[in-house]
Image (tube, rainbow, N blue to C red):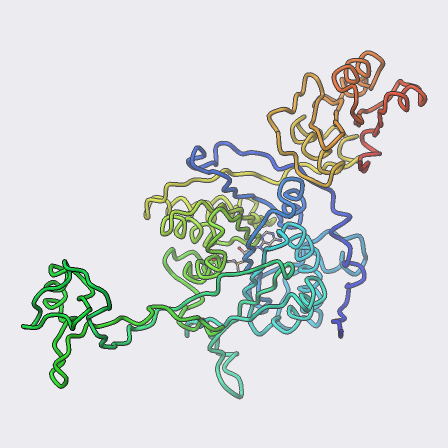
Length: 502
Ligand SMILES: C[S@@+](CC[C@H](N)C(=O)[O-])C[C@H]1O[C@@H](n2cnc3c(N)ncnc32)[C@H](O)[C@@H]1O
């Protein structure tokens, strides 16, 4: 398979692996109707860190991802901002990527690679990703997606109509104006089955005989001075028939004299990939963030119509159209879909208080809930501190619960299900198959330096779980190897030896 080459590709290809996990910190005062949030989250922060931080809880759980990244038009003011340890990429940092920048495609691709890889880890095996894009990067994105998601998982490209005012003078090129943009669609695997989108079709009119075989006395009455033919009855009761005559959908055929009713042909037909009946952009909220049309996102999510509890993710949330679309669809069909959105603040030296996530993303969702009466809400989280040795040793400590979630995921590759069983006082984290996991930890640096897996604790744990394999994360261990072996205890040192797996 041909692959795309670009500057920085070899540096960036596995960058997502070296990004430390971060905590996600709840910001209670920015929740909105949290009692109705039911899994809806808005996460403030760079999506590279946020996506990685979501892995412990959501890896393999997202059914539908919709993203609308910067199109790299050269005039969106986007900046390459990933802190990668390479002189070339460091040199790209913080500079706006303009149209004349000779490395603008390289920068965009280097930005997308780690995010697309993390998004793929979050997708369920039967899930899919949909990406809005325009002519600037569409060809590059297709090749990149073929490489990361697999050529065989490409399903379609939909086209949506651009509104005229979005077509800039400089794009009115030698040939024809760009009248459409694209949404490309990749599945995670061939397990992904969708409900194909349908479109409403004007009813076709077909007159059909009003009699049916069999004797049904209640459906044998005079109609236009006639009785049903022998051995047959009318299709509906007399009341219904009178009503149909009034509506003009039951008649005596003027040519043949037979009684007929108007049969509505199927209302819906399969939609193809031409979605130009949908305008890509909307202007309902007048936010200057390339607000997408909720009908576009609803049509995408409806492809998982039978999955009415589906989890939907958008990591370039902008003005929050995706959560609005999810809430609208839930209201329409009684579904219980959940939505996670990520949006960075866009803070800069010149605008230190800028916070798009709080002021635009959240604000729009709140207004939509109020305006349309959705029975919903969301919780607000912020990307917090890194969970790596350097950060822990400098005294930047997560809460017990945050750390417990993280070590459980590192240890088992799965998210902690029974969170309520986690117990800070007994250090218990959770169970997995025949194993139990403990974390000897307190969010206090001084105490932490004195904590260890000691004999008293080991005896207590083994008494509680006599036949289990026991994994204990702790800053130190005072037990002999033979004792540990005999009791089936495995020790993982904090913070250097976190990557222990069962
Ligand atoms: C094209 S807009 C999305 C518009 C959105 N679909 C809507 O309907 O409003 C892209 C958004 O992604 C955000 N963004 C870009 N890079 C990001 C990053 N690294 N982390 C989080 N958000 C990012 C930008 O701030 C911008 O708001």
